Length: 167
Image (cartoon, rainbow, N blue to C red; front, side):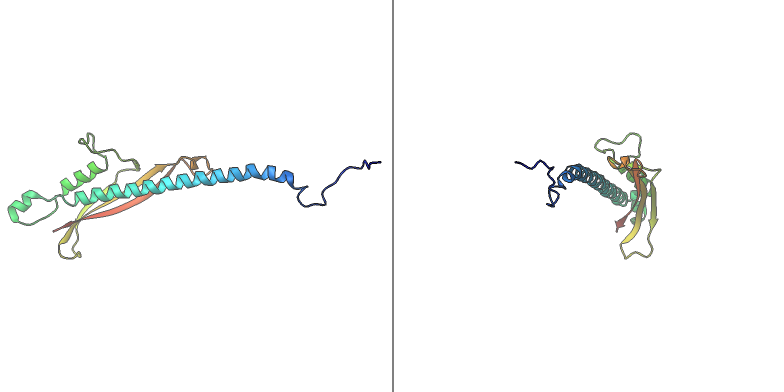
């Protein structure tokens, strides 16, 4: 006759642990999704920071090239036109009411007004005397990290750059 006692295969290592794989697979999937979301948001924040730096750097360089033509004609001395430099920098950053055709809006938001400083650098090597410095706080929206408690909807970071006029 056959033995009718219940089968217990727990003597083998794999038979009692079969159901744990069913529980670990969804947990692993959730961890991978969370890590992917963090990677996407951090990559977008890094790309926005690089874009903001490139935009502000181009604005500072173009502003530093604004020669005061009237002063040049009268004295023969090259110097920076501060008003034109500030106007060009503001135009690059999309801070004017009606930008000229071909000037695109930035892909990031400024927190407050960017600081544009035009000064002479007396310690600079010969030929590098006029400096335009731009400092701004830029904010970027999160895509997935806003769902993480304590992260908020946006991240802010500081960008500072300089442009020099070469005489």
